[in-house]
Length: 288
Ligand SMILES: [Zn+2]
Image: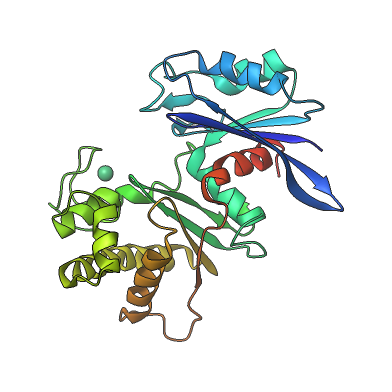
């Protein structure tokens, strides 16, 4: 079964083929091209998919709100993709089963099937970068919600009247727990500058990272009380960094909470990195 997974990002598009080798699903081919953000996304996907031999299904991950019938409702970085029924258009043009899903959902499936959460049936994936993405595996199935919008943890309000979020509300979790959030807490130019200062042992930066980790731990405890996962995977450009995982894990374990009598989830860093979206799309496209 040669499952093609395509992850269309704002600047680059990553394609992987996942095939069964000795009874195990593995990435057997990988290709990367620049995204033509102003172009026709459906036409680009058709061209890419036709460049691979013997493909049996196509999964497309996209940073968009994607309805359960595969319509990309809105996306910030592909201006021409708005209310486009991508699934229907692509499956007709390619003559193959096609599934279109949110890139966070795809990354969640990838970490569950081939990454850090392998073997667990109850999984929470939280990716921290520009904002917060992720998803949940509940009872061994990916949770999509009624409209396909499940897993938008970043817009869970953790402080009423707090910092302004790009979504227009105030106090969303990702206004604190994101690259921008860490930079703001530290009063620094970027999250990278904060982590560099931490590495040099600068006390104010270390305190800022601890405050950031406190906000992260607060939201994770809310999610643990909601989903009761066995495994939490921290991913994303910022979230998978070892010093960030260590800071969050430390604060998470230190929070006084009502977990008496139940085991705490394992916390692990995502292992698939930027390939997670494409790998997960391959599984989602094949319906597994
Ligand atoms: Zn928000």
